[in-house]
Length: 70
Image (cartoon, rainbow, N blue to C red; front, side):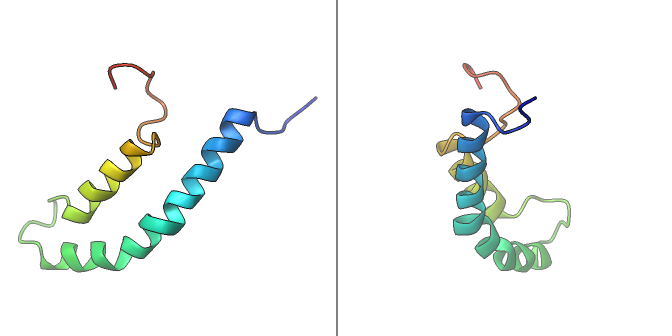
């Protein structure tokens, strides 16, 4: 039996790793600072919105949803 990744999954894994390395990991300090400075600890820090938009633009947001309207 072949338990390897499908070509699509391998491509997504590679792209996700690149996104994490280039944008998400460097933004961790910004996230912590914005969270500490926020008046409401339950408010989403602005850097999270930026990362979400970047992931969406790269086609890496909500991978579990069907393509189309989402």
